[in-house]
Structures are given as C-alpha cells and as structure tokens.
Image 1 (cartoon, rainbow, N blue to C red):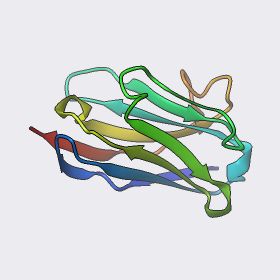
Image 2: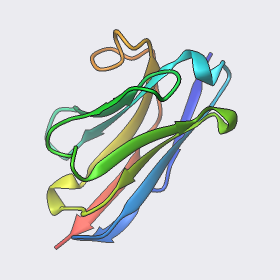
Image 3: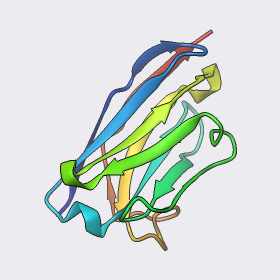
Image 4: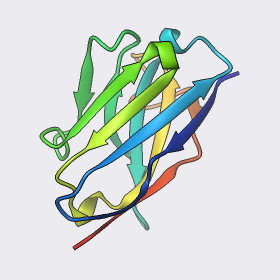
Length: 121
C-alpha cells in the first residue's frame, strides 16, 4: 500500500553533515507518523527519531538529539533527517518507516529499503 524510498546516504567525515530523504508513495502521506531507524553491522536495529502526522511533534533518541533534526514536507510526501556533527559511531544503514504514532517506535507498518551512511575519522 505504501512504498518508502530513502536517499541521501553516503560517505562523510567526522564533524560533517548529511541530509537523508524518505519519499513516500501509494498512500496519503499526511495520515502517517514517520520514523527513522538505523542498524550498524553486527548490531540490532535502533530507533533514531519520529515525527507525527502534521510535523507538530517530533522526538529523537538521546544519542543524536543535539545533532540530528527530523522534519517532513507533506506537500512533497517526503520526510527528512538532517544529520550534523557526524561521528564515526553514526555509521549504519538508515531506514525510513511509517505507521501510527502509537506504534511507530516499535512496530511500524511500512519500511524502506535503507540507505548507507558511513562516517570516517
């Protein structure tokens, strides 16, 4: 029903910035809360950030909250993750997700394919 496609990943140096995008299709974008997750090699998938349907409420996990910003543009059916002051420990595959606000953090309805972010020291 809903297709999510991430883009914007790549290689950055420590202290640099990247902006990830998640383009949605196949549903009414403004009806879904959205989230970002990441998974480093050999580790479990980790919640990063979420945003409600309107963009009026957002939340980031403590390890990134002073450096990352989640946002959305409902007119473009796109969600973003602005990542500043990148650290090597941010290296992971980053995944976009959609669902209800109640369940987005733990069990989203839809997932994207992921985009790789690599931060070198």
